[in-house]
Amino acid sequence: MLELRGVALRRGARSVLRDVDVALQPGEVMAVCGPNGAGKSSLLSLMAGDLKPTVGSVKLDGRALQSLGAAELAQQRAVLEQSPQVAAPFLVEELVGLGASCAPIAVEDVSPLVRDAMQMAEITHLAQARTDRLSGGEGARAHLARVLAQNAAGRLGGGGKYLLLDEPTASLDLSHQIAAMRCVRAAAAAGCGVMTVLHDLNLAAAFADRIVLISAGTIVADGAPAEVFRESVLSEVFGVAFHVAHEPDGNLRIAPVYRH
Amino acid sequence: MTMATAASVAPRNGMLRAGLPIVAFAVLAIGFALAGLAFGPVRLELTQILAALSGEADPSTQAIVTQIRAPRILLGVAVGAGLALSGVALQGILRNPLADPGLIGVTGGAALGAVLVIVLGAAVLSSLPEGLRPYLLPFAAFCGALAVTAFIFGFARQSGTTSVTTLILAGVAVNAISGAAIGALVYISDDQQLRDLTFWSMGGLGQANWTSGFIATLCILFAGAGLLQMARALDLFQLGERAAYHSGVDVERAKLKAAGWSALAVGAGTAVAGPIGFIGLVAPHLARLSVGPSHKLVAPAAALIGVALVLAADLAVRTAVPPAEPPIGLATSLIGGPFFLWLLLRYLRRSTPHA
Image (cartoon, rainbow over all chains, first blue to last red; front, side):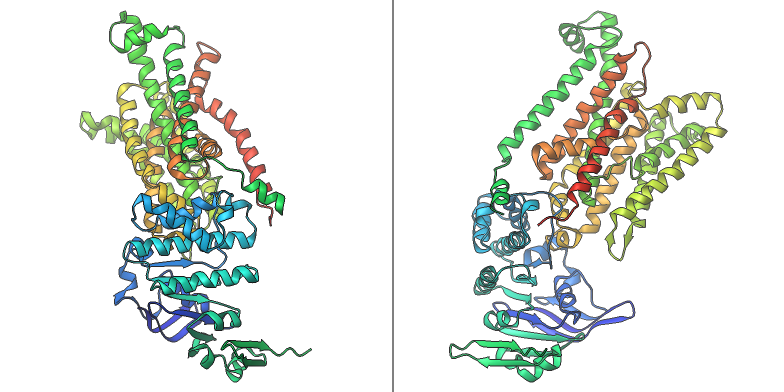
């Protein structure tokens, strides 16, 4: 369990998050939704360990996150930043290999792991392409594959328990958004707890087990998609009128009501 | 789009094919080392060199090879490898191709340390035991290099991230300050010190003897081993500091190690050979162009290129206008200056947004 207890985060005079209690369970997909500046990425950074809470504690399977070294953490959790970059022109395959190098695994396990990750992220055809010559979406998929490889390598070594993704679908077309969310489900099926920041509420409703809705630095709702995504709650949080329909196939369809 | 994709899938160096350039650079470095032993005021044949190295040549050939030219080559190897590996580490840590120990002030700091010892070190020297005296100059140069490195890294670090622009600009300022301090020390130095200073500041392998060559080699061997171990961390640094941390790199520790080892390598080299510019800039670039971005290949390739460049530059200045010997920095700057301009152009062109 990766948990924040009684957490508040201040940056300078500004309060970014307050009264945050949230726990990510193994095997679940948690989507974090909310307006711009609500504190979604900060929440993810606290979970990842690159921000320290001003008040409260962060624990990974009962151990304080701050007591764990970077190498140990990298085996337990993998993180995909918002708009990830790479400064050197690695090949896609080499970039994904960097992810696999984050856990001490046998040399012969590396290339199947890299291959699987590239396949999941649908980037295999560009394995030999230079990362500085990829389009935005292709680059995003290459980095997703790198993080999936880190997660899988960690799992091979007895870790790989959590996956933290900041808007993994932001620059992807519709079909690749679905592919990315399938990667998320596959990781969860393998026992990994996944927390992902998402702007697309329909995607969140379709693929997540649980929605954490944040507004102005606090969690306003936490529960199953059908519980959280109610018209009154969404209108309140986003300041836009919403229409939520329950489809016969069990999916939610969430549509903002546009007024000119 | 299709065309761009087709171009980008063209295969590039695999591990095996990357081995080839490394072997080529090794051959080049060995070639320049042999040429360094063969050419000079007295031209020697390969057989004579081999005889001298096995101790069977006539006394004068023996002296030329083992007392004059071999220590010079050893020093050249150490200095070239040290500067190149520092360049690899600094460029890697800063994710910036323009970082060079000379540009960001590390060499200037080492120079200030060395000049301080030459001008004001007499009192300290006389109180040291005989055996430790040769180590004072390299030690002071190392301290100077380390002080500057620590200062600029600390200065450029704001709210958890290191600003490369600030770091390079701080380096420029530090260069100016250490230049001024060296000027002041020159002004107060006596005739003998002035002579020592002038010879030293021109830079060159001419001052080499077995003791100085050995000390520099030892320091650079340590630093080089430390830097070579950082290959994976340097690869991960290319993702940015935060993602490097997510991937298991202790970011602050890695920066400290890179800065410390670089300071040792640059300090040790600068103490004996004086300030030699541009090797730390040029060698890593040539290495990346030939073996790709992976640091476990870039580091050894750059070290060999650094060695080849320094030995080539030394050979050039020794044989250009004999018996005069222009400073080696002249040759390295002559190659390095235009190279730096080309690099700037390339960098500016690349930083225009692309799809």
